[in-house]
Length: 188
View 1: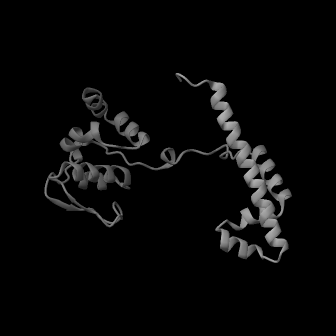
View 2: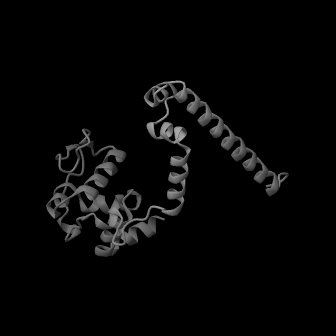
View 3: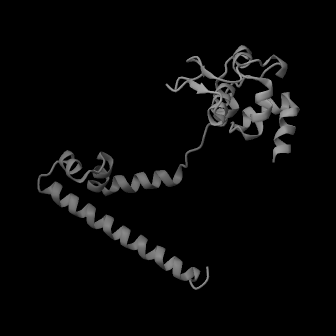
């Protein structure tokens, strides 16, 4: 904060808001003058690059006032029963880590239902690609069989602390397998 005061900062913002408001008023007056001279809204839009709504509000100030009042009154709110996507996504959790016997090296191509990115080929000998494949399988698996086929228990334990996962998925796995939570806290 040093050599500048809050009053000086508020003055900067006030000057900006005043000039912005004045510039908006002048622009709208000029657009209305062009319209009165025969320019169609579509031509004003084409030449200025403004949206149809911006032109409409410039030509009819009462529309802008009504829109702004409406926006101030009604802040968008999610429905009362709204749950974030991560809470609704049906993440699959393995029944037991011992059943995870997926590949541990070489090149792997995941099936399209797990990885539809167009880059479904993973070199498991490259640490970044290995971690990326584990993240994809953990987040996109729709059956326990997907997990058993593509994940390896020892690799999962080793990678777990460093995997970038949705918190809901991580929580479900760590509740089912406390050893994963312990591995993460040990690594931290």
